Length: 180
Image (tube, rainbow, N blue to C red; front, side, top):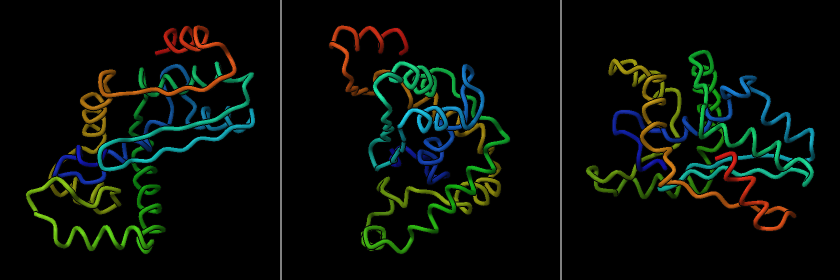
């Protein structure tokens, strides 16, 4: 979650969340995962909170295995292509701009005004200023930083997978264990 953002790169956890959707070694097409889900009655989303990042999807039951083939690769071999970096900065910035006036975000901003500056609590969604402009001014390579963040925080001992399917539990376990 965003509490794991380095102080020099607020929004990095959220940016990493975005980047995982953009291709893997096994499925390099940036649109493959979402296209597969949509083509089989499904959808996906993700959210980065203070202490976690949650990825969710649903798909028609007959296509669960194909969806898991694609989803599991986020956590095995994401591409993090440098070419996607700039586009996703813009996507995060657009998301930030659209939601800046939400009541919940305004309330959170008020909380931050009174927060101890030494506490890791911060505005965690990131925007073009924090991800591109400020990181460049500090001499940071955002692409290298997101790869480092992923390697440090996306580890099996820090993850939980919840799965619902029509298959019996032993079969679901086999499906998951063979992919993760």
